Length: 171
Image 1 (cartoon, rainbow, N blue to C red):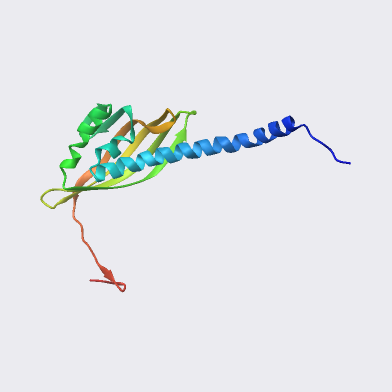
Image 2: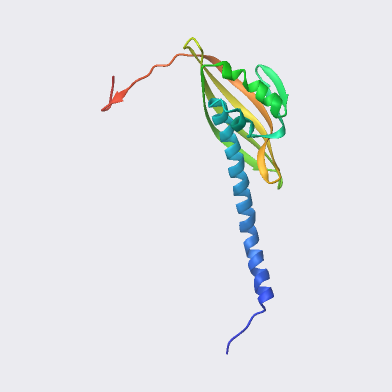
């Protein structure tokens, strides 16, 4: 004897089972969008690409830097700010230690750290570290930085020594 089931009940059970997976996929997609914004921030500033750099922020974002102290609101002000760092001959960021916590479906908070090396026109270098305190939001399904506080931890002269390693020996 064969048992039959109500296909509506079967579909309802499947939907209930799928709901937690859909929520997980949504959070993973949101996290990837945020991490992409964080990468575009560093790559954009290092490559002197204003479109990429500002794409990390929502159009009405606030960019709050503590050293030198300045608060920028909106894309135009944020792009104007980046002209200062671009006066350096070269910039290179290494970012990491990002931690993202979702508040609700369209808001999240996070922290991240960065180390940046700046080469000056005279060939000398500066090394700086910063901690970012962020608020992210999704507008029209796109996650970006809504607010970034840049806490400059340290900045100073950097003297580098380059070793070329060949067969385990420094040259």
